Image 1 (cartoon, rainbow, N blue to C red):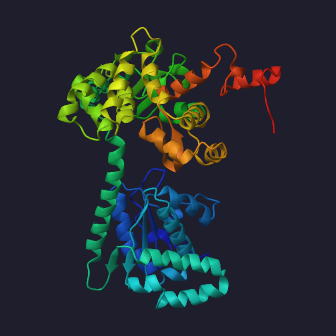
Image 2: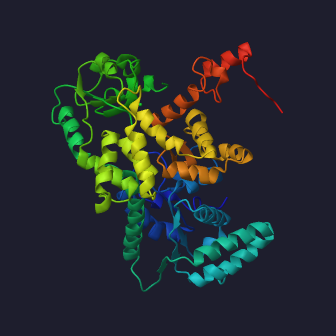
Image 3: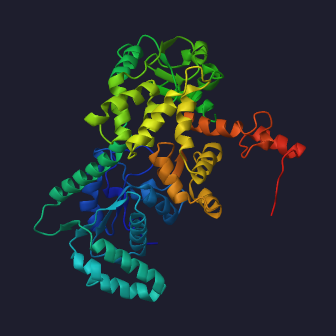
Length: 489
């Protein structure tokens, strides 16, 4: 079986640079020992030293797996594709299959990029399948279906037109490797910057928590419990038997008042004195049962930082226009220093007119401090501004689909004429949800709680009269007692 992953021994690639398991950032595709032992080896080493997760041929395959299933997973999971198109590249059906899948992922417009390297081959030969590429396709035409051959040719045509690097006798391969690495780092940086761009005023809390952790001391174990509003198994035995003796930093997010340190992690005395623990919770009493726990309660965001976060979502910049400074300050006040409220309110107001801003400000001011859940009431205003179809999609995600891929719900919403493509787009722009990697739904805990609270209020006492039931106990009770009206077509 031919493959860029199996064309020759992997021993030429460096063994000293180990990367942890997980998703890949870069997928390299190449053919032949001459490429593997020279350019591919040099490039892979540079990427690995830069801590860039790169698909690494047979050594990434688990025992018992064939090559194709692993490639099927590795290609869409990667962010950047680097096909090294040499004279022998087109002779491998696996290289062509890889390339076709790269092009397919690139065309989906989800952020994948292709960085081709024309290794001692003319890009025109790749585009038009001339020279050695023509000879290779004469052989493929005798073994593979016409449709498969057409797909491979189309992939080569697409990649052959892309801007890449042309390696020839007159150029320095080391220089090109450096340029490719720089391009990869630049692209990854632009992707990851988007993830952290919403963080403002983070330095002071980090410094305060680091001080509590007392990293310079090895005399005693340190536990820090962070109490505040939320933004936290089968591994228990592994933790007790394998992890507890090592120096480690363990962070558990959003623990509740049922959390028991000993049952989950074992005895504190079993851990190294250099270990550190951080637990976050919305239930202050949850930290009372954790031995030797130091408390840290973050303060509300300052007015300056609140205004900065609000403006990021309301205007796409850190400061308000001069003419809007006063009303922005009023919105910051009603958000009361809550980052999620600032984000959702700002997103609701983005690209809206002055009258809409003033109307919403009156609505937010109407939420008095005696409200049972002030944050939920503030978030509910964004929910009320949704269309009927958007509300149904929002409630479905909050009740059922957090963590699920979008494909199956999309079919359901389309059949219901909810127009999911535009509906999901609206929810994302309103900061009510996100699509994570592999198109899985993500929703902040408070927003999820808002959606479920809205459904619960449809009938507080009788779950079977509500539009949605997500609790296993409620669903079983309803089915056992046949208390709901169920219609089957």
